[in-house]
Image (cartoon, rainbow, N blue to C red; front, side):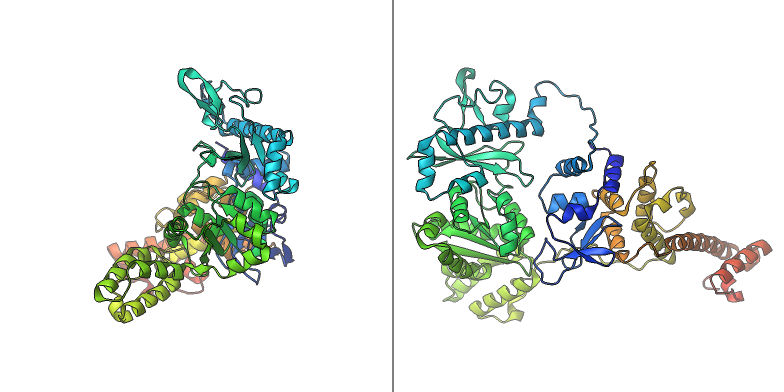
Length: 587
């Protein structure tokens, strides 16, 4: 666990502009910085970074966060890794909370496993350099030394215990990492032998697994690392680390099936390709790619197996596709994979094929129409029956409506007739639910909370009992949260406050308010706004208490002192009370 007060202190020392600028070129725009958003495609910059408040916000797609959040969302780092990177650049050490673990458990920590994987990757690269047979194989596939170095390609010798001199071979960790297999009688041997080795990286650059390809004939042709604490095939994509900048530049990503396909495409200038890792495309794969780019092209062989794989990719992409995103499918000639295609025909031909790829909507309609030809009433009914669960999964409202219209045309039904048969899916709200009308007290609480998001230090010493009896709600709960966050000795910035709220129920509200104050600067009299909001809440509470007394006992129940206090508050608000102000509701 990383202490929250350390996170706050770290973000107070970090400049978010310096963190983001190496990834996304920022330009000065008044007090803030701006750029085209790295999280969605756009031509007009809507991505804003505030150096004074230490957070970013995109007015186009709604992406928002702190320096830590940016490294997680854009660079693909884990929370601890993002904190470690920022702390290292700031020249400070991340405090470690002592954890009691047995000796058997310690080697299996992620850091220890990562170190083992790095040692293995270095070993495989070194063995490649001294194995002419492996080098000749890569050359025969058209790969240069530069590309092999870029992807860290290596070679696992044809030895039962080739890693024995490199890693602690007898330890539990090498087995947990998937490098070693424990056989009968306690014997151990390397998982990868006599194979070209493709290291698999996470977005932080760590080696988390390997894919090994046989040099000659043999089975299996490809052998992957097993599931480990570091590596999950359903989450990771080969080559994504190397392809990120090219994906942004090209505005698209190509998803292929093999390691060699990715490397061969990169060798011929198509550097925006990634591969699934011996498994079908998962919803997590699709979601991850659609967060990076607006256009995903799945590239498969044109045989039956390739079309089945494409259909699985379609099913898993439907729930995460949104309007403005483009998913399409490219089927290569039978017997050709991307490696064969680009080596024989070149980059221009491959990119021309990409441009002519079949859109998701067309592939969906083609496949269902082929399975259920709408030539009869029964065929049309079967077509709509098969389409229903797929269209229910498609949440993009505009695309969903257009596809439904195509099915209406195929079935010969009107839109009105089709509506009850293929109802539009219920749209989950992308942001906070519609707000209900707020009481005056809650409106003032929101104003107060906004000042604290701008200057959290104002909450220091603020007594929450001041608001006792005020209406409960998200603003009041968030107000209590902010007061708790400033109890430490170090000052806290807007960015640090937002980061503290990351996993709380207050994150969306506080960020919504932070967007409200993007235009505020040091010339804004936030102290006066804060004091006015606090005083307004006090007045509302006194007024509410007196009205309750009036309702209980009538005007006569008010003492002269109470009348004088109400009058003073009314006049301060610019509304001197009339006699009617003292009447209970309904009187």
